[in-house]
Image 1 (cartoon, rainbow, N blue to C red):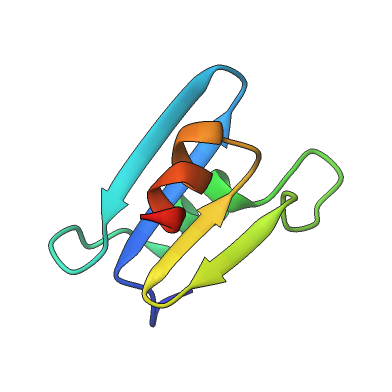
Image 2: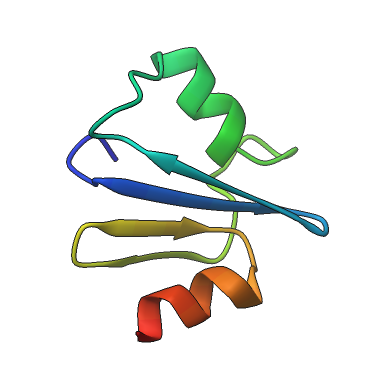
Length: 66
């Protein structure tokens, strides 16, 4: 995750984007974003190039297709 430059996280109807080259998120903050209720990585988790998309977000997937 630390090697990604962009992080797009979908939770419900909300989509949050983080520029990991500018934002210094702690391990706890990253974990809160990507770990689901069962303790595993939220699905789907897709990495394309330097962008990591966590959770289903139509916007996030469209962003990857550009």
